[in-house]
Length: 118
Image (tube, rainbow, N blue to C red; front, side, top):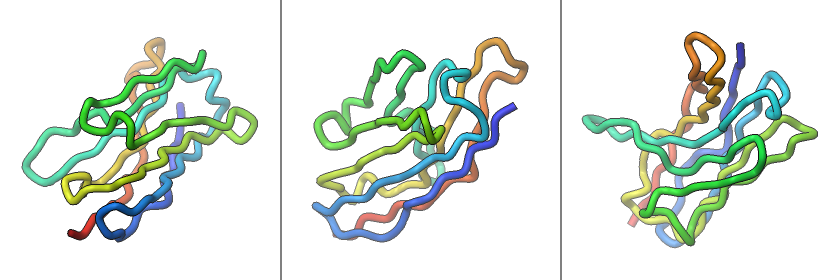
């Protein structure tokens, strides 16, 4: 089992930056992939960025070059640095941990609101 706690959301003007943090209750080396997803009302949750336990990353096309996912293994933390924010980045952001050998194999944080004003 994994518990995840996000922090760092808030209100920012377009062009600004925010850093989201996700604290995991166990070593992130025991988690296959950690990621950030976002969701707006009426739409499906979408992947923003992910990082594997060997450090490979991938990003949604809409955030490439603006967002960076990183981790601090010693602290069991994963971060999402968001730069050049746009109003369309407004959403609830969720931290995810994927352990394919668990049932269920996905764990979610409670979400943190990011609002970008124009």
